[in-house]
Image 1 (tube, rainbow, N blue to C red):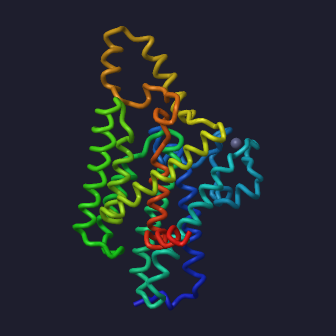
Image 2 (cartoon, helix red, strand yellow; image 1 turned 45 degrees about the vertical axis):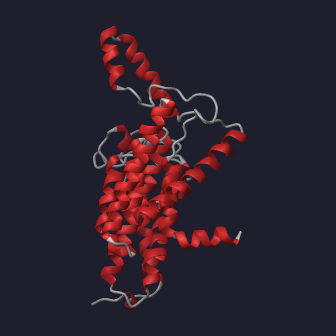
Length: 318
Ligand SMILES: [Zn+2]
């Protein structure tokens, strides 16, 4: 049996960081293609400017972007630094997942077990990072990530000192709680939902990973961080407009609706009832929409990588 102590200390750290860099590179593809309904496998990476396929040796995470100074090798079109940042964040998240969830097991742990724990936790971090970027840009959280993440959480409950019943109750409670309170009740009181179903599914994921008390913590921490960000963006005068991609989609939808007969329009409007795409964000904080998902995701990552006890400890020591 191979033990972690059979390897030098730097080895798993370099491996996990590189693992994260490579997946970060793939996540750039996911973030661009999944919300546009495109395949993440085909076609392979190509230049956004001239569509030339990018050979693997020019697609080295972070390094290629730095060496080419943020330009494509083929036609010199500017490549957004976001690509390199997503890759770097992937590396940092995977290294953090190792340090936070595997390193505490000690060096005399079975390598296979250590790898399994790492893979589960790192996969969650990477998938959630992609979901955060997609939500920021399109105000959608893909089901494949929230539902897949929930299943992964239920399958790996034993890695986190959690009972299976606690994980199941957490997942069900997380989803139902948000759905009943922020969708049904909120809609009844104010006429529009306070949070989307994507947020309810994120809370379901949080419950599957950390139990019902963890889901509650994620909801609270996400709400506090989201509120702070909303206040900062209002105070600095940046406002709370919908993301560009959402505004563009709304304009396109309106143009399409204009072309239809009254009957067809009624039908489509009935189908889209309650879809945030139809309503523009109103004035004032109470009416403004911000993507809440990224703040819930931040809270989930904090819970996984820092831990509730340590966060409470910090807060109490202030
Ligand atoms: Zn090019």
